[in-house]
Length: 169
Image (cartoon, rainbow, N blue to C red):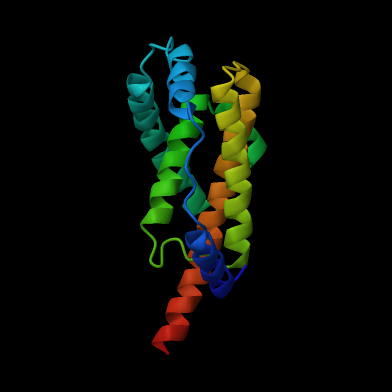
């Protein structure tokens, strides 16, 4: 989709009429939500630890990548990385994407990568919502997400650098 098609789709969605929810929907939502409340473990400390580990791992990885840009073996990286490392690296890559000029205006390749990342995120969310505790599958999905994010950062860095040069000259 191009920008005009995206905007046309947004306009069509905004033009849809408002619908009243079915009677009793709010009560059903509250009841389902109450059934899912037993989770009491806070994920805050785990997230903080993951960020700290990722910051160290990311700085080491980025230092090695700058010296050996083509020598990264992603399979070895996945085997050595823990889930917390993968989450932290994923967060760092997302932050790097957010810091780029023209944030969110991806080219064609960037959009494909973004959609693939969304698919991985959907699978991770489904595992979380279904309380599936398969750490190998979760690690595989997180590794796939990190590799896709790395590709997106590289593609967008190159695309945006070229766009800036075209605009400047």
